[in-house]
Image (cartoon, rainbow, N blue to C red; front, side):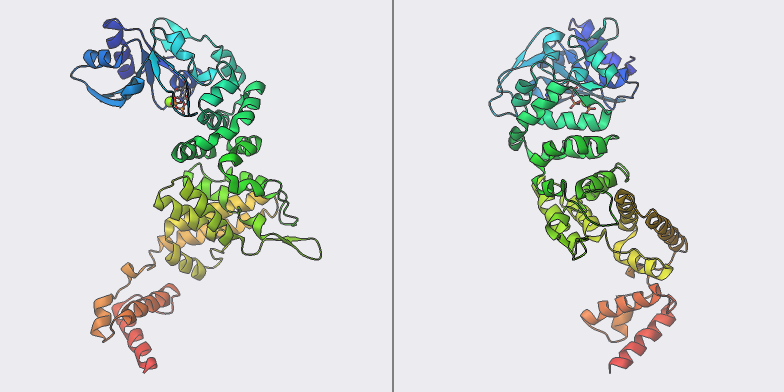
Length: 442
Ligand code: ATP
Ligand code: MG
């Protein structure tokens, strides 16, 4: 393992001042796995005030002073540095009542949740691995440090961290640890919704998301109870190979690992169980399910404290997932004016994911590639698709004598005509059309 120079310098600075200091946690795990760490955490014998003295003059953020954490800002990136500590009791299943600073790295590693993240590394002393993290890493095993029930009871968020690590690292949870996750999952009720959201988004965007969502569906339903009816909800429909949950999970795996897309894919059919009917021939139908899915999704997203913008973006994709995007240039132009390019492209991705996730009718995906080609042609042609691009504006309408809401209505009618290519986007043609329309109304 090699530390980047700016991290190695921080280690040196503390060591030269007499404080033992190690790289710890995710960066050690990721390096041993041959992955590039996304950030570097250090742990040290120095107390926060001692760190402040050592780094006097440098830029330090008091990220979590009470827990012994400071962030050193360097030109090359931030380094989070935490005093060796052991956690006191957890009364509320979330926060330790107290933290005790300790003087050795092994005691610090013992408070960490999983063996793979409970290793420290030092440029001269090498790896410190008191819990067999390296072996677990080699075998791809996620194992709680110490007694798993006690660890999940202390901090139930660890249960969702485990599911996230399954999704991101592709690990299998060791048997006792997995059993304890299930025994303790009821404690997830006391975890802050924002933290639940962060772990779930990480889970949805992991490379092995489908595996994690299938294996730990029951755990996830304790924080997403609205989705439980999807589980084993048979579709009884020749267009579908899988039940509603498995279909949705497979669809999640088909879209890019972007939070908005993955959440929309997970939620797109969540209204199906409530909408299910079975006809005389035994075929299942789900009339009106996109609107019901949107309503259920809206409640779930609000509860998990998604931003207003994310709620709108995900909600729109859920609601529109079943509506056609158009199989002709004209229809594509119309939908593009309604949706805008970003939503149009996201819906294309959602519809492809949905189609592949059905496990039948691969030709449906072929049609979507054609729609995408039409979209690209339309955009390349620089067609007029919004009021902003129209060759006339409100002032022109006022000059024609229109007033109030009639101005906007006329502009939208002119835009429709341009989008449908029944008129050209020139001031002359549009003013003539507007006059003709006004004449008709007289
Ligand atoms: P990543 O940053 O890739 O998500 P990580 O393992 O670095 O994974 P962080 O949340 O950055 O996770 O935490 C850094 C380290 O702190 C972890 O490796 C783990 O040792 C410890 N840790 C974090 N959260 C907890 C927790 N809730 N309980 C116990 N230990 C934790
Ligand atoms: Mg980390």
